[in-house]
Structure formats: C-alpha cells, structure tokens
Length: 224
Image 1 (cartoon, rainbow, N blue to C red):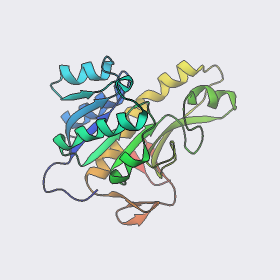
Image 2 (cartoon, helix red, strand yellow):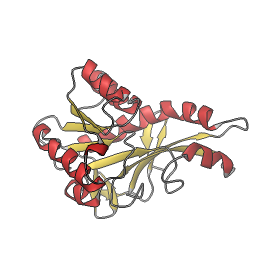
Image 3 (cartoon, rainbow, N blue to C red):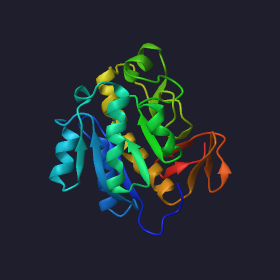
C-alpha cells in the first residue's frame, strides 16, 4: 500500500458476528492502530457485524447475493460501492464468500484476510475440526494477502496455540479467538505504517523479504 498523506482508510468485510471487526475498532479507539475505519461491507444484511457497525455510526453496505444473477455480478456490485469510501486497504474479517479474481486484481497488495488455520494447512471451512482430526499439536490463525486462489495468498503473520487432548472444535475456536483479535490489528498496523508490503509473491518487512511469516507472541509480532 502506498503511503498516504492522511490517516489510511480501511474498509472491513464481514459475514457474521464481527468480532474481528470489533477488535479493529477497539485498536483504533485505544490508539494502537493508526487507521480510519470508513465502512463495513457484508453479504448478509442481517448479520451481527452490520448491526454493530450501524450502532457505532460506521456506514454499512450490505447486499444480498440472491438479488444478483450470479456470483460475479454480486461481486462487481459490492466492489462498485467502494469508490464512495476511498479506502486504502481492505480487510476480510470473517467474510464467508469466495471473491471473483476480476474484482480482486485492482486491489493486489491492498487486501488481506484472516483465516483460522496455520496456512497452508486447512484452507476453506471447518478448520478447527480438521486440525483436531489430523492429530495436530498446534492450531492457529493466519493473516495473508488475498489472491485469486482460496486462502492461498502470501502469509504475513500467524498466531498459534496448543491443541488440548480434550479440545472440541468449539473449545478450540473459542481459545483461538483472542489470539485472532490480537493478530489482525497488529498486522494492519504494520501495513498502515508502510512497513509491510507485497512485492510480487514476496511479503516485505521494512523493505526486506520475509523468509517466514511473522509470529505473534506476548510482546507482539516477531520474526520466526
């Protein structure tokens, strides 16, 4: 993302309860995240994220996929609404749709997603169950630049937790969520400050390519 003379403008996409959206708002309000959240976009007008945005006075754009002839038509209509908000960065925070590559292409390097697995493990859905059934020792979340393939863009940073012997998908998800709420604002902060950039397929930190994703620890994000 190119440097902006003003505070970078962020548009968040969400489909559900919006907990990661709210974590970004809290980071902005506490002074930890130097961005302005310009709007929330959604494919589910009745979801909790849309309600939360409107309660907070943040513009919400919510279109129903069923009102369009096909997926590409919905995506074009949704992304056409972005111009009014002049965003510098898009964040997919629990947005449960696969977006058409044609609408993503102009945003290369300026759109990120948070996914609940240690990518490249478990793209797609049911990540907590899949990690448990595979017998993994650890599970986590990843923030990555969005590309044409599902959950396959260059990974910027990850947070991980141990999987307990008695974990269920529900308990594992609940224990991971606070780490997601720390991870996403930390990554967005680095992008907003121009410290994280995308160069082709390479993630760069302060101009230097990352050999491995950053890792979230108690003190924040560090090199692996």
